[in-house]
Length: 318
Image (cartoon, rainbow, N blue to C red; front, top):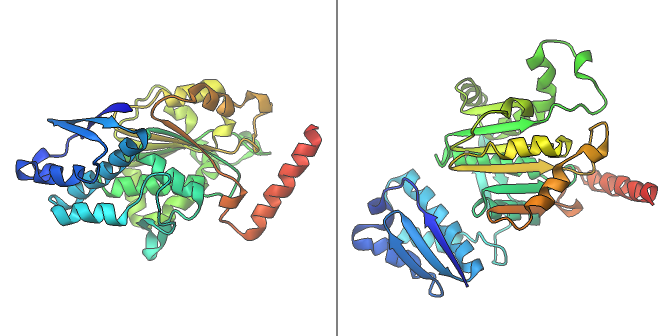
């Protein structure tokens, strides 16, 4: 058995639970195995861990509906339980939509580990998504961030990468610092362009609602009320990773993505990603998802390429 306290945040209790707590009673009726006590803006839960995780996932969905619609009824609560399955081990619709992007593009969690990333987002504040190229780990993370921004769960999105080159030198590239760094950040711009109209995206960037910057620019900041994504984290040292993770402020989600087979640092041993994951293993509020070749959603040949290169590296290491 496990005990946990959940703070429901700034959403109005009357809007959330209804007059005389009628909606609260409806909501907890779906969890007969849990003991749930409401005290103001806090809920005290006691029960099995998987039931608490499911409760929190459904509660997050309910709060999003309230923030979007302003008011709800019993039917909306029923829909949450009929149409959403956001916990590992339940029958999850593998074609569930994360959001609708530019030109009506449907952006979905399509593979087992993209679905796990979707699930973990609603029960962890820090998520490591590790795996080979083409598995959609960064794209799915950005989709979750854009969804949170559109639904006003957060006030900003911050995307960052270490400015480590793969075979090129920054000094050899033309232009000022921004022009030198933009090629490293372009994949992040590309993903956002799939999800937000260009004019709106430009406005978000100008207003700093969406910020895209190299990792060095994170030092000294406290990042609150946002989804913060560190991409290409295999190219961070342990010290840089610590610096980034300790930027976490209130009401923030941190997602760290990386591929430990594509380290571009001068010495592979300098990468702190794998060691950082090991150090934080078992810490409450932290989830780690390992993507694999089955999650690759690019051209079918990419999976074969990854397999061949992985096999070659294994042979050389023996």
